[in-house]
Length: 228
Image (cartoon, rainbow, N blue to C red; front, side):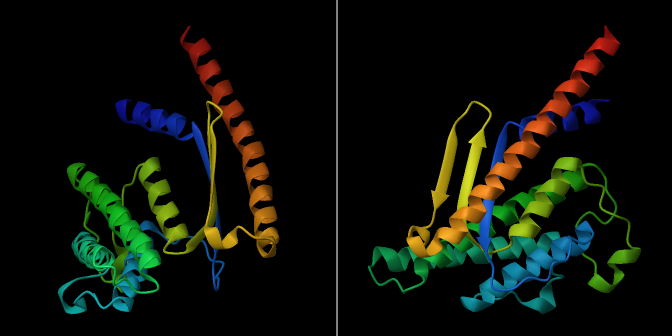
């Protein structure tokens, strides 16, 4: 019951804010997120490709991508890259793409830390093969990762966003605060179609959010009355 109550509490907290991202992507596969074990491997591969681009690749012979150890190493490599870029900026010898690379590496570090937190929670709960140290070809026959609803949502969001460029982001809080962030290069008339798509996404999300909040309120109301 305590676990159920905790999951319900987290779902209620997630409903307190709405986040809408418009992403610029050079190509799309259109596939849905695979099982969590495969998704964690996909994410690690994406992050490693970024590290290869900046000259900090992982030693593949030492790790299984998608494992706890791989995310620990990815995180440390990202920190090395962040420090190198900050040093160049401090010396005013930064390269053309340093600012964008810094943002991406900070994202890699932050997301790797969050995924490591999921692994540690799995270990604490006694999950089988919690560290995902399994070759991809053996993952379908391995025990599924026993994730909470919040952990599954976290992995899905990290998998969805990857290292794509977020052109626009709108965050709406339950208390009425609205924050919209737009990259400088999209603040122009040529990007009007992107603005329109983002606005339509916000409107659609607001309608869905409102309906979902209503369903949750109705559920808790019925639950309260049943206990009464």
